[in-house]
Picture 1 (cartoon, rainbow, N blue to C red):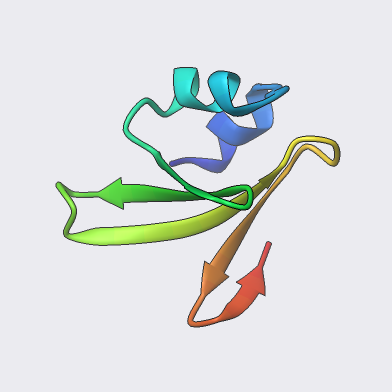
Picture 2 (picture 1 turned 45 degrees about the vertical axis):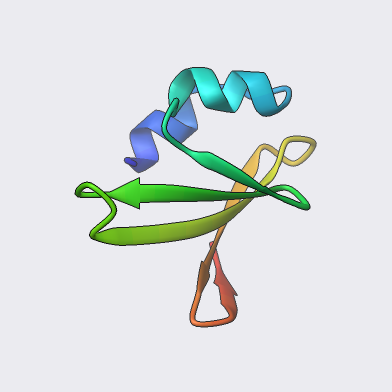
Length: 64
């Protein structure tokens, strides 16, 4: 997932995000799991479509 990719799209909802990242798993409450290198790594992020922001969670702390 690259910042340029996230900056260049406008997601209105779940279907739009899945078109950009078809392998992202929706796990509820606006949270998605992005699998990196064949599930070797995972990024948990919260999509806020109204603010056009993707929040990344690292060890229980939210980073932008």
